[in-house]
Amino acid sequence: MPTHHIEAPDGSFAKVVLMPGDPKRARFIADNFLKEPKLINSVRGALAYTGRSPAGLPVSVMASGMGMPSIGIYSHELFTSYGVEAIIRIGTMGTYSPKVSLRDIVIANGASTDSNFLSEHRLGGTFSATSDFSLTVKAAKAAIDLKLPFHVGNILSSDVFYDIDPDNWKKWARLGILGVEMEAYALYANAALLGKKALAILTVSDSFLGGGSLTIEEREAGVKDMIRLALLTADEYTTSCRK
Image (cartoon, rainbow, N blue to C red; front, side):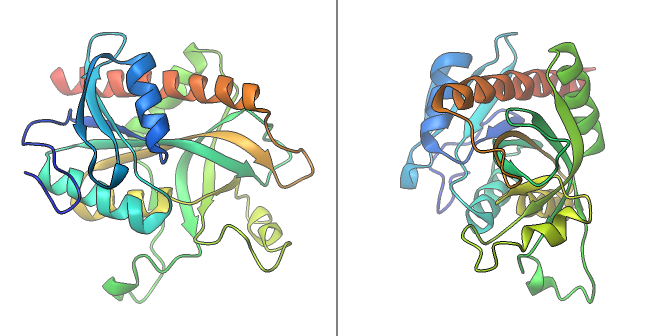
């Protein structure tokens, strides 16, 4: 049912939702990858569409906005008010690892954080947020089929973009963290709390090791590869649910 932040009527969303941060990217996916996309939400500019994948299976795409509070709100409402079963975050990240190159794909099977997103639960410890294993396996298999360079590993979901300590990332890199983005931990935590499925598939757009950043053309190509991978993963999930 409609919420404070989503105006879509009941039944508007598919069981699996691709979730980029940028509303323009959501519109780009709908216009260029979905068949018969229908705009179902525009509240606060968080564009959402439902259509069919290139294989003809139902899929939705919705912008999450920037940061963990924003994706925390939207993912919670999709999971609890619209019957969404799986959310696949798609976005960009900066790499901390010499093994990860620009334009590679990272399939995040875990998300560490510097956020206090779960502080209200007073856990008395640290919650390790992980992706859904079945979605992770499906994404890795699809990446192999598409012949994409990819890595599976732990990432950092940070609340800070401009860090006051320019070397702080090195502490995370020593623990094997592949790189940083700003949303996955909250998505994974909500999925765990609500018994749902979540995964983040990320294009490496920047390097903390002096590797620079993708050009506009390289970024567009990398994003398209990521979208194709996410759609194949969504199709595999939808097909498995029908068996």
